[in-house]
Image (cartoon, rainbow, N blue to C red; front, side):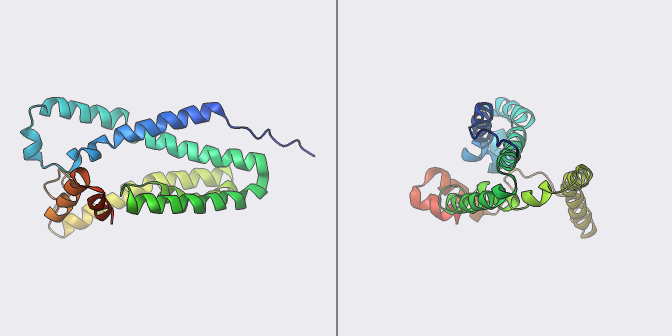
Length: 201
């Protein structure tokens, strides 16, 4: 009979989680301040436009995507640790935790912040026990498919747009967004609690 692993928190993982959460907060600053939906002409009129563009470039290169990837990796490591400690018996407990996370994410998404990611983590987390039973070769195939899928979908969308005579989609500068959507962002940033709740809905 094998000796079960000691059930204690791994301090290094907690530290990395804290750093990742801070990075995600930093990555969302552009959304919180409304720069992501600001029309290009208004952004160009700002006195700090050059600094803003440099900061946005640095944020995209060194922050955006990096901390989301780290957080996703930590989510998977957490499941792996639970599986190593509890074996197959850990799976039902993991699913119960995912249901709680899904509920927290729903409250967060509809009442606090429309950019919630917890619901997506919870929903995708239900597939993790299935992946845990796959061989290394099967995991490699699934990884390559999931990495290629976004590019394939984007290529299909571009081809469809060109075929429809609209050309490739231009980068979103905020000018293409409907006035109603821009008003929602504005009310969420400058309004009260009621405005924020309505913007999330």
